[in-house]
Picture 1 (tube, rainbow, N blue to C red):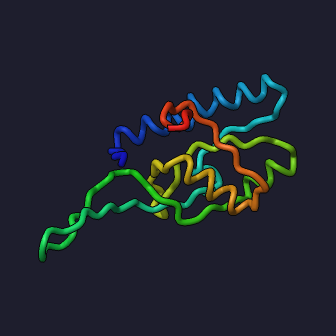
Picture 2: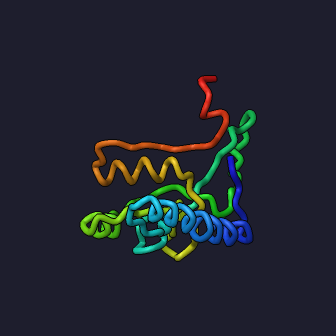
Picture 3: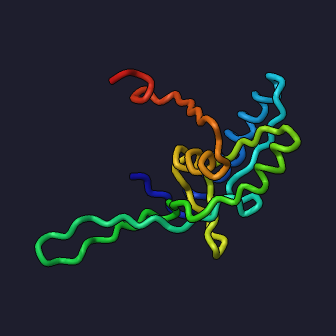
Length: 139
């Protein structure tokens, strides 16, 4: 399980919401698409809350709560911005950074964000691309 402290969350936002997001947007645009880069914070698109992880208790002890910092889970997806972009035939590239009710940024698993977004949009298909070796092979 990942842990994201405050300083790392700043880096996550800069890298995923900036560098990586804009590189993907650029590649799509160079290939003839019309992409726009966003994060889940834009338009309050991904409402999130802090994820809590519990470690099972020993004997009669209460479970241990493990602080994952700025790791979040999805509360709600607001698809309005994506629908507006879709109407104008833009391809949204969404970095998996959500926002809490108090404005706190949360690092969320990208696969979960993609799956929930597909569900909310009633997508016909969801294609996931990866370069992760363990996912690429049949083992």
